[in-house]
Image (cartoon, rainbow, N blue to C red; front, side, top):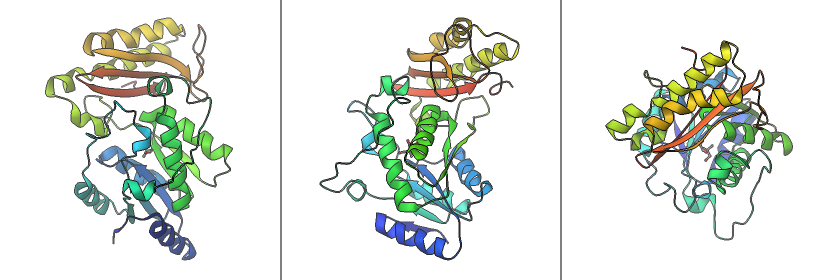
Length: 287
Ligand code: PAF
């Protein structure tokens, strides 16, 4: 039976009782508008040993900039609950903004270096909002494992760092990107795309595939790998925030040659929608 809770204390009491009964609690933090990618995270925490799954649905105002899509972000709680029931989620945590951030709230969590470039450069307050809300979710839930999608690659690395630096006793999983049959990475924001833009949006996958295949064939020049990924995206999208190779662990700029474990990251805008995607070179996006 799916339990739906709204207050942090209600969640804490629920998971405390689960742990006291010998259950291992897994957490899947989301902003709702759930799709198959989120459900793969539910499976991932189970595969990692969770015997009960908490899924949070909270459109976090703290991680949106003033000109971003907070107000139009899709809110589909009834559908989300149906999907959670169908996938055997045990608890949905759906707090209101004032339950998450009551009057007087003034404490934030910040990961300093990993958050500077890429998404951090394009969205300066974004990661502070993400780390703060996820720290609160970890505290209220007390999970042994939590799963995040690798589509938000920098977010995953940042949250991994936060948990390590703050001695949070939780395993942070980064789970493979789920893609539509034509390669577009699944995302709640895909709902914004007009049909014409939806078709053009596959250019990101095509670019990542080109770069990943070239890397697998021995290409290591960063400029060439970026050029391979960029060309199609530039033609299909209205603008590009970045198409860049970075170290897979530290997200550092690699110099002229890409290392064995490098990730290609893309952020681009089409018809007012900003999409991000990435591939670990020579490993992802090869088919
Ligand atoms: O990836 C997301 O959906 C959000 O950034 C997260 C991790 C749920 C925090 O609000």
